[in-house]
Length: 219
Image 1 (cartoon, rainbow, N blue to C red):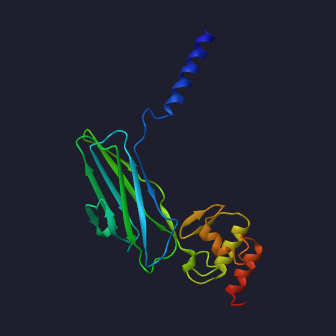
Image 2 (image 1 turned 45 degrees about the horizontal axis):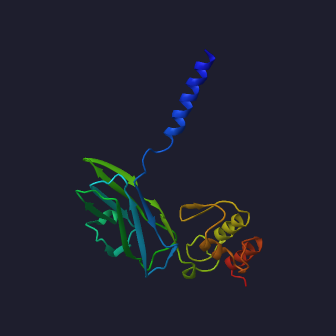
């Protein structure tokens, strides 16, 4: 009796264990962004799509920040939706599509500030069934540090007490929120460069004091 119970439990655990692994490779799309952007210039974006299920159709939709414009794409997009600033690519093949790549160039407005988000989704068609998935990989892109004032950690223009508080949190390795995005230590290079006032490669209380002095108009 105990042997039967043990076998049943082992069988159940085996089912739960193996069901956590996909039987087949997943259909995935990965976005690759540069780490930073510069207002008034362009960035290049790449999307790699792997579809081991060999779908007969792929639909990709990318939504860009307001004012950001795709100036060229390979392959070219088929539809643009103005009110959402979204671009759509469509590819069909009777023999099935194993992989699909998209490269596009975006013109960044001169008034762009802070971190910006590019989001999107892709759908595959298999035997008239449509399956939609969020595009993975990079989503947020930071403003290039050289266009920002040293100490302006929140990237709002100018240095004030809010930046002092952010620096103190960074010095103690606490999470910080910039542009609605929460960052955990270790922070990205843009935030570290903005906070490292004395350029010693570390963000500490000395940098917070320098930012405080700058916010008060002191040397």
